[in-house]
Image (cartoon, rainbow, N blue to C red; front, side):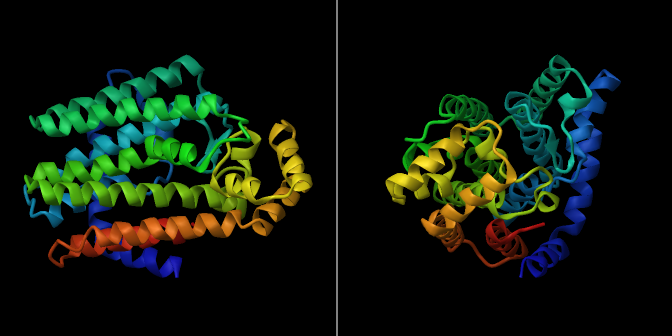
Length: 327
């Protein structure tokens, strides 16, 4: 099913993806070749370009036909790349998309400053719209994502983390950028406040589903699929919904075991497998799948007020793909 969905999406957006790739290269434009090298290491390492596609097709679904949507969409990929560069430094991650992380090849200060450059580049592109509404959206994204990262850092290893606290973290870290891409497409097209809100809500639900699916993959997918080692979250002390739910449901003995695994900085493969078994036994995996599916359904419902079009089909398929992807 996933491969079929992917093929259908590519069939609809293949030309857009080609244009986005060219625009990302053309609009990067740093003054220093080193900055281009570091930025390109992540930017052109196989990302799905979900956020640019969401912005492009949100705008087109609202009737925008100017052509500027391609260039404008790059700012969301620059923002995304900036946060990934910074996050990998903070998390001391070794792999990203199957490659060594940027700070494994260049110094941390150079990587952090390259992330800052990508952030500034995104803000510059936003300013070219001369639309205060879009500038407010982008400003909100940057401050919310920063707070989400800080919140996640402060919650590391907290075995009492609640589902509500987790939801706020992933809203800030993931959903706000996807939400902003969709809302910006609506603002660029100049639609009614009602349709802008519908696309904003679509983006929120899609972002929540997307992150929950990522959190599931960390426990259920292989290193080849993930592009990094499975279990990275638990090894970094990050509690995600599958673990939060299992801890909530487990008896004292198994909860104590899981707590020890969270506190174990050298978790081995056998211990990780034992932990995964408990996540299945105590409904952590299935519950997370159910919540992600709820957000997908909610996202698609937000599109009901829009006329049928290729772009609406793309947004519907992307919602389905967000939780069924494994490649």
